[in-house]
Image (cartoon, rainbow, N blue to C red; front, side, top):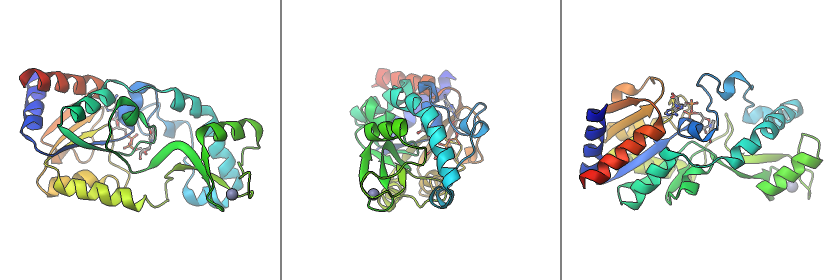
Length: 251
Ligand code: NAD
Ligand code: ZN
């Protein structure tokens, strides 16, 4: 293990444009369940797609029931060692951007400044009719006082969280930025993602095709482990903490 940490830190120091690509697994140590691990959200809830959310009132109620149960976990979560190590690597001038599939805002809370959110964020909600934006506080209030099919105070339209649903296109600006970064980086740390959600999962593949080196950190194997230079199977918090201290020691 220590040899791999040394090798990873070497790759990091030799890089000129290192970036991170993260998924739900980086936040499990903050108490937020991921989708596919044992005990993950998929074993407990059905995923409501964008189309269902728009056209099916029951699906909306189902979604908000899940949200109501999970929201306090989400808003009370704190960054863990993995988020903190990435923020510190950015301050050292090593990591240039964090591209994330997460919606929890923990990278920003840890102090990362350049964060690209591919799947939106859970900071608020939007009315699908008049596009009025609601802050998290207001959504919490709506959840407390309204029926589960939340409606806009102004126009009665459907309220949808500002997260990207399955079946919903990704925000174009963020996707293009992520693709550009993947084209230019020479090292990508891929952390806590099963790489099963497209097109997000194409980002590490682009980096690989362009000759960047990849370091994977996951609990379980992925279908794409073979494109990585180094693969860690373990806790993202522990591995990144070790990589960070090795990198600091050696400089
Ligand atoms: P996923 O659930 O498909 O995969 C999680 C990956 O993280 C797995 O490979 C697992 O082995 C690994 N993992 C779990 N705990 C880990 C740990 N402590 N250390 C290292 N690795 C760990 O997640 P995904 O690929 O990100 O896809 C899920 C989608 O769901 C994403 O698009 C994301 O938008 C969304 N989501 C986000 C959050 C969040 O914001 N925290 C939580 C759940 C789901
Ligand atoms: Zn409205």
